[in-house]
Amino acid sequence: MMKSILRLAGPLLLVFVSLPALAQTLPTPGSAGVTGAAALAVTPRPPSDITAASYILLDFDSGLPVAALDPDLEREPASLVKLMTAYVVFGEISAGKIGLDDTVTISERAWRTGMDGASRMFIEVGERVRVEDLLRGMIVQSGNDASTALAELVAGSEGAFVDLMNAQARALGMHRSYFTNPHGLPGDEAQYTTPADMARLARALIRDFPELYGYYSERSFEYNDIEQSNRNLLLWRDESFDGLKTGWTSGAGYNLVSSAERNDRRLVAVVMGIDAPNHQRGGIIRANESQALINWGMRFFESRKLFDAGDVLNEPRVYRGADTAAQAGLAEPFWVVLPQGQAERLEATMELWGPHQAPIDAGDTLGELVVTLGGEVLERKPLVALAPVESGGIFRWLWDSAALGLRSAWPF
Image 1 (cartoon, rainbow, N blue to C red):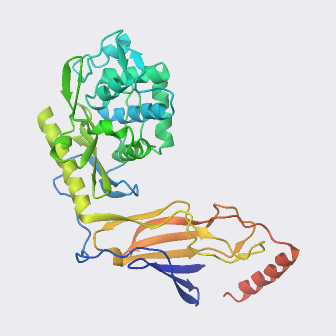
Image 2: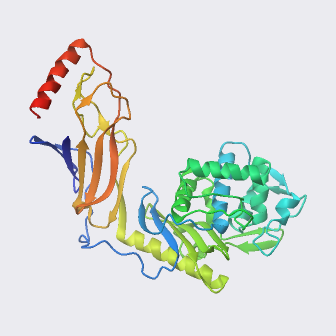
Image 3: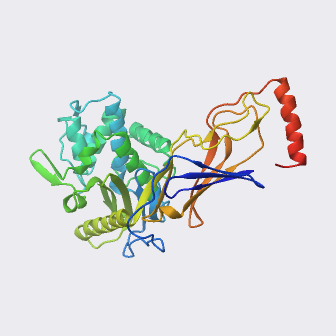
């Protein structure tokens, strides 16, 4: 096995250390370390006054968590379900299957959804409503009736739409989420999700549909002469916040998925299961705790992309191949999240397994790249072959077979 150590402060230096002894130093692309404030002695602790039963703070660019408490705890989502409803509808709009100016004839089922005191857009049976108005009614007003109307438009029935929701959840890697309706009201069958899955969904929604994400920053929407305010109080407090969704039922408690962007950096916070004596206090507490998490993450942490997908990081020896070396790199970008001012303590170790023998397919694992901060592992990813290596001819096979025999007798 060959180990390589990558120093990640200042210009990146790639140091190959062949066991037992062969070393050379090569410059590789990189960025300067953090300047200014001195490196922190310890990792900053998250805010201590968070009362949410579970939460996660996610770095948008990398998709990595900055902080979390029981992020995989399955909980009732309440109206957070509408994020998945929006994701599916946005997909239909982006694909050109439906348009914002298309109209929907409101069914009695949609009209009745949420009649028992739950949030509504106040649409009427038989009324023809524009898709864009229904989207605003669902996103800004949290209208359960609007959610059902959109589901019926896309899939023909609520049940068929739920199948689309769960299929999309699987495609996004939301393996601890299960949806039973498009609005989040309690029903005969329980539905559940986790903070980690909701953060993953919010990130996908912002990333995949930037042209439609702006609806989440709207503070109010008026329909049928009834104006309703967005329940996300953060939209009034801080202009850096631009979404996403609140939720509450007696079983779920107070939930909030929020996001803010400052200085070209975006974080996503999910808090779930907040207990409060009334809606006013619950709305304030979930906003306070989400804001505290994002302020903390923005102040004390940064994310860095260390390597791009497809970068050739090493060219390990290949035996019995048409080529004598493979191109080893990453199938996806390598990001890390670390405390501000600690980039100089980053170190990456590249472990190349072997000896490698042809044929090698693109994507075959050749080793592993591990990044540590002060000796503790931050992230690890497989090193893969970026291109195939075909088998060599008979003379190459015989020559390398002899070399492999010598290698096993006298490792070098």
